[in-house]
Image 1 (cartoon, rainbow, N blue to C red):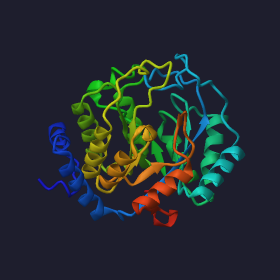
Image 2: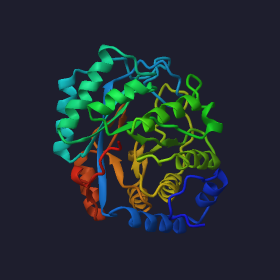
Image 3: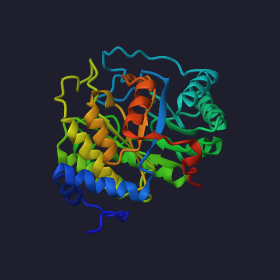
Image 4: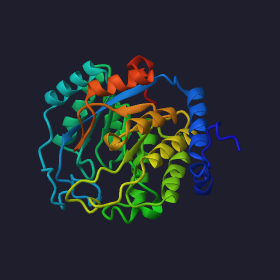
Length: 327
């Protein structure tokens, strides 16, 4: 089996076999795949802005933005366009080449709020940044509007395997999520889709999630790998923490399965040791969320991230190095 060539027919058993290799052998295989498909010295810096916090009607059991849980996050109105553009300018000045905007919506609704998000996309795109949004479920005409405004990618995570999904979320089905991703791909917008390690799943569930992603045609343009941040007030606040080397394994397997994707160390990165973060970069991670906060969770200071990357011999990927949006 040539795991270096992109495939779209992976089975969960095949992916599980990759996971269960000795760790250093797995990391070495992933490192070689990474070097064949990317400049291994470059890391994309992406900043994530919460443009509409809290009040979400979903019941995702990890999320402090769900209105039904008693958490520290309160529902707030959608931010003004100029405030979001100012955030994007600051992120760009700090070194980010991608700006992502998230709204705690179940789905996109046509109207003034969505019109405002379309304006955000247009104005951030005009700054020369890659633009990504995550807004929940949407319809074909809505992703078309976003694409025409300059959207590069749409994030909609699957979170976990189909088998484990119902233990985490009941208000939206796995097929709902896949339908949204299909609308995105059909519009020629890049798909950003990943998951969370630590939702009470088994390793086979992690393999199942990655097999689902790796069977997409094309593969997702970027794959965020999150480690659960146990938010007080959510059903998973007492969940046992998954070993950090399992995060490294997940990064490595994602890199082998989807060699051209950006594999992004996302939420939970602060809970990883410096050694684990370094090993994750060796295993093929080539993007991080960069900035003081990821929606509602803490993130390293930008200066600390830049210093750590320099210590590893890595440098930020510039916007001119990035591939253009599809379509």
